[in-house]
Length: 308
Image (cartoon, rainbow, N blue to C red):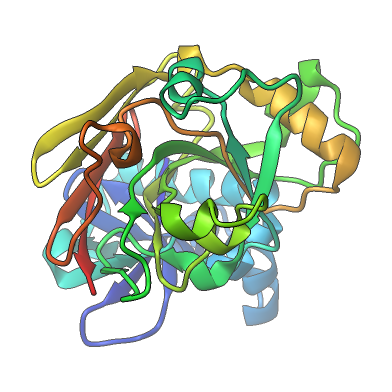
């Protein structure tokens, strides 16, 4: 499934849906329809517990809610019940998980990016944090504060956690994943590099697009072999494959969960490959009006305009 947070254009209510080609299926409504077909009656409270309509509540319910959504989708496809589907142009997509309890980012996780940044291959994963103030949806503007002159792009594969994970073994890591999405770890290099800690350059308000959807693990069985790219104003800037990660996803989940208990809806951004603006000669940073495109194979493509 391709799970989305959508709003009808005349509404500000966020609801969880599923992308089906150029349409979006409302999953709670589809689940109601499925329950009727199997002669099950649920109260409003029971329905909200099993498959919440609110995306934040849905993803914090984790894998059990996704399993209910899969039943709803399968029934809708079998019955060809198109009345619950909306055309893509009727709505806008927002950040899939609006307010994760943790956004953990991995620095220096592609060897070619480490080289272009004139660093050393790390012995352990380099961890830093973002906060939900930074998150925007796949159609929103990236806000560039006037006080940074070196705003940069970083395409990343992002992992969404599906159930509580503490001290997870590497061989069991995939059991804890809800799905995968795309992140653009937009970074103010001049702020990042003025102190040894990167945080101030990494979590500026409304700077980090996530989306356009979360693809569940049944559709992406090999996240270690996905093409990953970024573009600025249509020009390709980054092109690599997740097979080039220094620390792969199972290792990252094992490593992080030994330190920090991960919760459903938490996001791990796995790092960016080479080709960032800072490392170009001369450096090419994002300017007002630039359009940044990022894409990951099997997930999709999103574009965000930079606005100062």
